[in-house]
Structures are given as structure tokens and as C-alpha cells.
Image 1 (cartoon, rainbow, N blue to C red):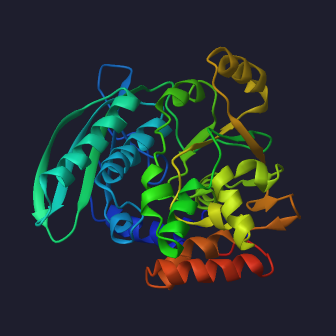
Image 2: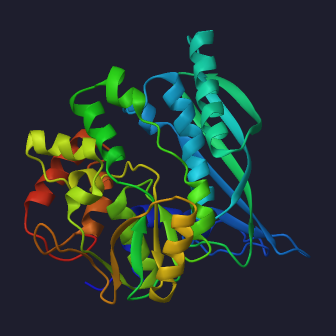
Length: 355
């Protein structure tokens, strides 16, 4: 199935569209719906855009993915900072809104604050204000503010056949967090150590050369599927999955005899940037990356047919639309989602139909 202009085959996109049509549009907004990880507003009389993003960490806490307070705070900051990175912005700061459990102690509260602060410090930015509330369960919402030159902005639009596909690092650690939380509940080990980085430094190089960019917060397969639908292109991954996958995720799959794609197909990702570089920019891009001592992971290439095609360990096309809609079909039950996803990955591979 050709995916050109089939954004609304994906339930999440369809829900967002319903909200979008309810709101009036700011005449200074540069990006159209779905086109960028952060919203971009022009500053009249300047060559700068304001980059704005907002996100909430709630479901992940309820599912047990993030259990200790420092992780909750770190992830609350990182999810929004990553959106700023994906448009090539320089982060100016975060606003936070935290709902604290009514029975939480000071140690828990300060643990969340420390996590937010540590993530911001690592990203070279700060918390500039916020709000606290009390409720039945913990949640954290962050709003990020950044600035980007309008001539160097990154978006999800622009990749073409022949462009090379890259990531800022190995993938699948986010999927491993979900699997361990639901199957092993290793709060004191792997889950407590999960600290993905917002790739703000790398994005300053990427934005000089990339034709499209999106972060992997929803997992690699969902990221590539959305880019396919927006750009009317496809992706061929010509690198073995075991060279793409996070080593811990690969070891987990090997031990349980699971398809390693399970770690890349889940909607809980690891916040790497996934981006494309035109063929004519390859040499200069590599030279600049080497000069900055930053390594990038080559995944494959943009192709003309809208599909996600893997060459190794066997040639197969991923049913990415079906995978993206699966969580909705199981009414948000993540345990059932993983069980059904395993069955999909074990079955025959066909096209990218949304099912």
C-alpha cells in the first residue's frame, strides 16, 4: 500500500487532527501540523524562530517504566528537550508542572526536582519556573522554549530518495525499559539507570546538513513510518539489526529468543535523533562530525517506494501502520500490546497498511 498522504490511517494522527481543526491558527506559526517535533513561531523583524514544545510523563509512571523520583524528573525534562533538539533549537529553558502524590515525602519530591535539574544541566539549560499540585498519582509536564535560525531549522519534511538515513546513537533501549518493567520489574537495576540524552549538541551539526529529522521517542518504526507518510518516500535499512540495537536490548532478545525488532517497534523510545543527509552533503557532514568528535550511526537509505524495508537478517517489509495502531486496538493495555506485537513480528511480513 502506498502511504502518500495517508497520515490519518494512524489513530494518533487522526486524534490530533480532530483537535487541530478545533483551534484557530497563529499567523506567525511556521510549521504545519505533524511537520516538526516542536512548534515554530516567527519573531517579526528577526531571522529567529521561537521553538516551543510541551509533554507530559504520566502513563509511563503508571506502567512502572519510571519508578524512582530521579528517573521521573530526568525523563520529564528529556522528553521536551529532545523535541527542541529535533528542530535544531538552542534550549532557553523549561517550565514545569508537577503533580505529586498526596502521601509523597520530601525525599520523593526533591528527587524529582534533582532529576529535572540534572537533565537540564546536561543539556546546558535551566528550569525557569513552574507549578506544583497534589493528586492521586505522580505526573510531570514540561514546556520547553528555544530559539533557532529560520534558515537552519530542522523539520520532518524534505528527505528524498538517495538521502542517507542516520541516528545519533544505538536504538532499542526504550523498548527494553518497557519489556523489563512489565516482565521483570527490575527497578533497582536497568530501569533506575535509564538516562537517555536530549541530543541538543548533535543537532547543531545535523541542522546544517539534514534534509529531515525526528526524534525516536515513539520508537524507530513509528518514527520512520511518520516520515514515510509525510515525505511520500520509504526507507531501506541495509545494516544488520544487531548493529543498530542497543547492546543490552540485543542481549535481552537473544536470551529470550525474541525478534530484536521488538525493541524497535514499541511506542516507548530512547530519544535519539533520526535524520537524513542528502548524498551531496555526505562528505562535508562526515568531516564536520569528525572535527567535533561526534559519531553517528548509519542506518540505511531513503527509497522512492513508501515502505520500511529491512535487508538483514532477511529481506522483509514491516507492517508499520498495523504496529502503530496496535496499542489503540488493545485499548492501551501494554501487556497485551507486547504479546500481540510478538505475534505480528513472528508472522509473515507484507506492506505498511494501517490495518
